[in-house]
Image 1 (cartoon, one colour):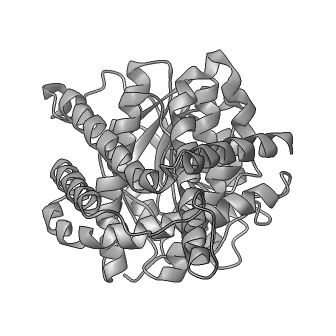
Image 2 (tube, rainbow, N blue to C red):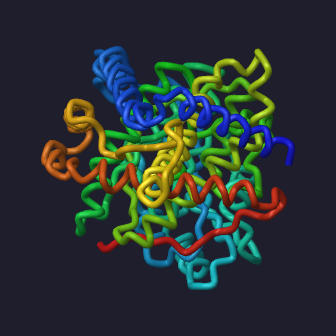
Length: 431
């Protein structure tokens, strides 16, 4: 509870300073521009320094490829798991196993996995008696794995044939690398919402990971595709069973234990995403709540000098939450000022940005999208076509981020720390 109070006070302090300074409304519009600028600069540097370097143009060659374990936690994945296992089994890698963990699925996922094991000799299946959550499924898979190098993917994910090779190489090159984040791509594109997410994962999520890798540490690996060094997981204590976002929690845990996390954009994986507003809301609310839980859990750790490399991640997250609360407070004061007289210090005359600021924000957003899609087009053809959908992004996703942050942060504040993070039925989109 003390950690939650401390985290809340930090956020409220930033909100108070922003509003009391008289620049609160300006900060609401300046913050997205600042972050977009940082993502552009960091993404450009990452691309030209690493991605576009000659050594990164060809598929890596490993002199002595280590044995690898591909772990697939499954819950109610009967519609997708056969396709996922087939893609995993088709890896262009000399020696690997597949460990599928059926976390008490009430559908026929378990029976389907047992049948698949008769067709794929590298597949082993672990059945858990009841639903205990993705973190537990990952932990059981890691403990049962025969390798120190673990590639973890979702039960609906399709690995690119060379993904394992790209994920393992950074851990071989540097013994301090505890995890490698892959590059998830969107499969569901039959609705406008699905197509917007194609642009989002390329121009926002991919660019953020690139820039965070340049400026310091990564906020989170992707839960869809990530590789881990098992000895690093053991040192950090494995996944927290109460975390509802296993990927965010383990990312912070590894980095606070001084393990590096690298981002490898060539490690591709195709996944399904929500294509309804209800499904998207549930997914992003879970992400927001999970991020807040990790923030509260680790707030006291950031006071230590030894954890200074995580200060950038901490500051970025705190500012994003403070931005959401500042926006909500400004909107409330603007509406209240229309009904009753307010003191000058509290009166918000308008929530519409000045013309020059709105234009600048729009131009910067388009530059960001164009740059990111140019970078991502080397991994996926016809990416430039998604630039036309980018116009919807500020409306759909910034407002969605605002709402989910407010609700998710509050839910994390009220959640019991001992409650187990269980699987939820998710929207897989239309295929």
